[in-house]
Image (cartoon, rainbow, N blue to C red):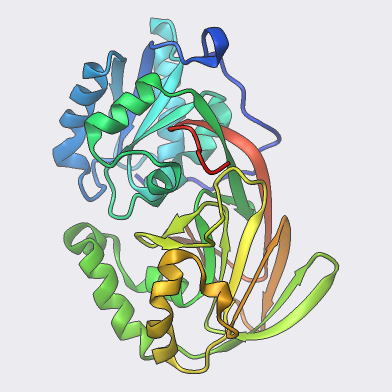
Length: 324
């Protein structure tokens, strides 16, 4: 399913899917599965069975192939109105599928659940949702909905991270079919070839009343905690902390990125003097020539890029955040 362009939310989502004391009421569940996600087609029936086994009344909606995921959410909910409506939406797919669902979820105002069927599943990882389908289904059936923020860049919303530079170029080179066929191996092979060609570029970062000129290989703006199959935006980042976590990789040589990898996985890259890291709620990023912007693994816009955060824009079924 192609992604819809996400329009920024106007405020926290509200919906009727909570019972006494905020506990979710097990009920009618709309399920949208991206059968083109890496594990989507073969695991769609398993996802239905897991949700039903957790006590949910599951109603799958299989959209036309050309329909975007956000449109599919809206169409599925409209179809369900004849049957009494739904009190939650479940998305089966990876981070790209979830990103595409954002416009429909914003329109619906219902809490949503995640069945992780993609390559990286970074939003599920950030929220502590099990990758195993039965475990994910139990979370959807029993956990109370939690607020989750949305990042936005040039009118396109994202859950995890937006970036300019190396990872955006990687997203452009790694085609959807390669991601589906080779998974993380596809990422690694494409990244290695691109890394050797990476060169710093000039960018201007305007935030909190000042503007900084940098020479960088990549600028990443995180709304969530994880991205890229387990990399960490910042060690204290949370998808509901109300801020954007920004870092700029200001290395001169590609091999320094290889040395940085353990810090990137832990989210401690800001300890390097070649890494500029800060928090903000709004950022304007300019470059000499337009550069693509990668949001949750898809190229959606280009620089100049205006970023902002929308706190508590949606609600998601997830385990309690024990770090809050």
